Length: 620
Image (cartoon, rainbow, N blue to C red; front, side, top):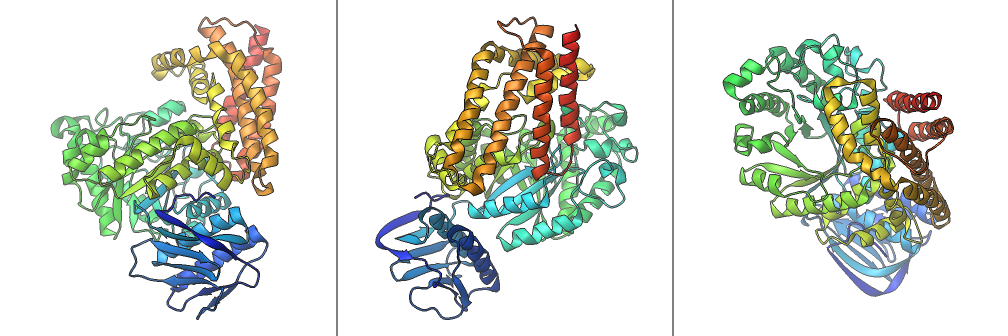
């Protein structure tokens, strides 16, 4: 039997308890009504697992009951669970009871109605255990998917969710931001907030406020506030969107605008925190604020803008948060910011250094460590990379006294990968931030295969892990090559450099494509080991493997045409274009099943560009 996260203490006892349809679930009278509500959620899940639920009551317990007892003298989020032949006793602090119910659900998921006798004492090592999902740079999930995400987070004892927003909220009157998009509405945000609160999750608002304001600063209404001139005249580029569009601190109107957006968005949330972001302000001092930066210094200009926003957020009764990638260059200036502010210290390499965490700790910062699911720019998430990155960052968080871990899932380069591919990385974050006794990769993957994917063979993630190993011409180089051929002049040198680094992978392309074909069959054969309620998760992986195979073949054509590569076999480019477009049809079906339209049109245009490119190669 597996439990994720692993409990702090588990003792096996003799005997078992039979959880029958006659079992009473008694919520004792001292329990809050929030606990009573959550007991109902638990019972709904029990019905899905066993086919029936308990008899839910509130009051005095009898023999053979499942008893829920609130004890607020216990540590926050802690619980004790005892299963014996005479019944089940769950006691804990209010939020700890919810975590204990999730543990009990995991036991039922694997053991059914006959539960092994045991005693668990458990509490998290890290108080804030969060997940960060990009809802801006391509993919905007449907509300139903976001609710399912909250349920999954609760199942693994996570307690904080943030959604990254630049322009994909329906800001009142700011029609240029969302006129060609499918933004989240106030009603959706408030409904999700209530849903999360009921499930012990703090939905923290996160709004870009300094860098990364592509849509805002490309609009006719606000382009005059962009640090660089003529932002509205630049052609769209996935690389330019990541590198430019910093709002200028040289104009007072910039602060007024951002404060207004923060105030409007903040009002939708019950959370006491607000993430103002302020990351990757690459253009600061390169345009309108050049004189200001020369006079004061870039560090002081940056800190001054962030300080204004942080103090505004504090005046509204909220705790400000911000990304730490800029301030780590001058960590001593954390003292210039309000003492309440939380620095979100991120790093995503598989061998991530502890330096930034150490520097910010030494400077006196209150911080979260923020690893990643390593899914951006990829057809399939790099779980091995995520595992190592999350493991390191959770270790640094504990070593340097961080108060939280926020595991990120960004949407760079149009967020083309299916969002369910990141659930494995999310679970790594949940497990390692709760309990720092971290299993080996193969071990935790077997546990997740069984518990999350309901895979009786426990091999699902081992198979999935081999898919990205066979990528030779992935989404990242595919985007670069298209923009190079379109003549996006600003990045031409970097396109060529990065492609020269990527294209050598094509030397093994034929062998890897044979492996991908075999992997598709292996994935489909795996369906028989998955419960029926999880089999729909296989289809996106099969489609991703097919997409990788097709783009590997496209890579041959591109490398031969522009980089002098030669291959033993070359595809029929006309036929390959048809295969690509068939794949696109199914990809769009999967995309729309979990996401709004968002920027699917950009992915569609890119794939269609490749279809035309392949046909033109045939003519030539």
